[in-house]
Length: 434
View 1 (cartoon, rainbow, N blue to C red):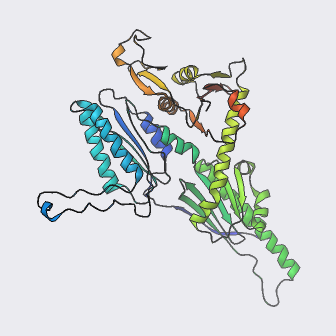
View 2 (view 1 turned 90 degrees about the vertical axis):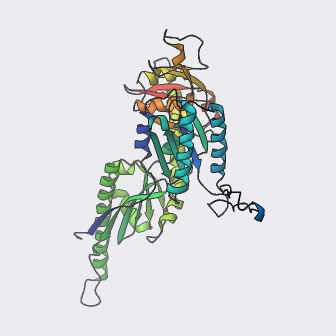
View 3 (view 1 turned 120 degrees about the vertical axis):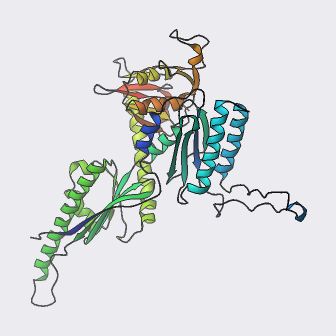
């Protein structure tokens, strides 16, 4: 029987200038203190260039008579999101100016954001997310491996919906690429290789030219080696997935090794497999990501469908679910939520008194609902505040695509928002019917 099927195991963390651990950053940003007098600026940018040149357009030509008196200004950015951001910031400054704490903080934030984009952002970034509040000394930039919808927002707390969408829609997944001689388990985050584990076969038994085993005996030993190598790969995969808490696995390789791996996987690994690919062992990272992304996207759509079904199941009279933004907000404020579910185009008006704290749905009330100071009540974007509260209380966030292939009856039977109770801890969900 083949013994020592694995010759060596090599673990490697791959350096990158991108910020891949956005789950930790979400928790950090959600915990930042509210700022009423000088608001936070939250900038989300799809950092993909318009055309092939990611820089700025050429500086406008200056006539000879103007060269001494005119300082040349750089041309506009070729990134559409940069142009949109600059226009939005100009409007915000005009609305909060020409002086005051809010204007001073926003002015400093705009300059710091421009400096970061021009001088510090890594060229490999496809998306950018920045939270800034100069009055509180906050500047948190993230260079992302994938684009996010462009948005500029100001408010008493960071607007986290774009980052939460990226975290939910593009979770870390693993790709196991193997043949009968070697295997590599790659952990992919934001289409970027984060960590990998490589295994090499001992190649035992080796076929001999003369005086060796018969072909039948050699084949039997070779089959045993492949099976033993598959068991070693399966165990290394289980350990790596558990340590990294990765929930999705794609198996890639030829039919011989994938067939051997199938019975070797532990059930906890099998439950995480979302697809099998036929890929050559020499496939590049770009080829692996391109082949895997449709499977990962489908797995995420399946999760969304399951979330809708779970909500529908919990809408009975046993208290397992409650519907509407008000009840959802109540569940989140009470810390009874385990999962927040929102459709990606959900938006609404809300308000908050962070001093109490107290939140509500709709316009800012004329009188304080709890008898507090009405001047402490500020308007908030409901979608961002629901997400912030969910993250602050340890709840998961599940964002459902409004264009997902979910049955129309599922959408029709679920009101605007709901929270669901599962096995003790409550699951909260906000839902908006498109």
